[in-house]
Length: 220
Image 1 (cartoon, rainbow, N blue to C red):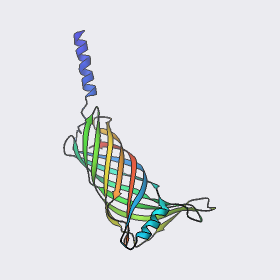
Image 2: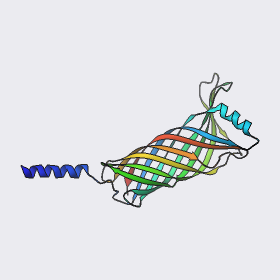
Image 3: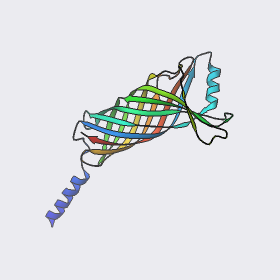
Image 4: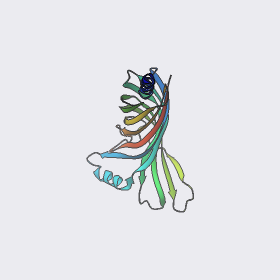
């Protein structure tokens, strides 16, 4: 009887104390995010009135991102994440005559370089990450519905006053659950902030997004 109890305790110890340490140094994954988005604006000394006018007409909008990730594990707790992500963010306009709705959406390709630290839990990790992202604006679009329109219209904005190449910073906190020997599912909160203005001229425009992301990762 004592032997059976010892065996039972040993099996439970092994089952509930599985290590979340990756079995390989590399992992690849996919992820998707739904977000709320807006922007910070700034102005030089002569354009404060224009900034105030812009701020009074723009409000929050919705965005998203999805892509692939590649993780390299430096240790059990420390890793680096890069990959390729398509993201959309922007802002809505309120009280525009002749429109039921009107918003602007910026679409980017991002290449992140995120440093991630994992705090071990039971069969899981609480992960904190931060790092820069190289961004390239693919296009800017106006998405609107006029008074009496049945469908939503989308028009590409070819604006030479927008900067294509820039830098953002990403931060995240996530719960990373072990599914198998080398597979993890990740649920977390992600914040992306443009730190170089996408607008040229006297008004600066720094889009940001805050959202929930879901991902799955497989060691290779």
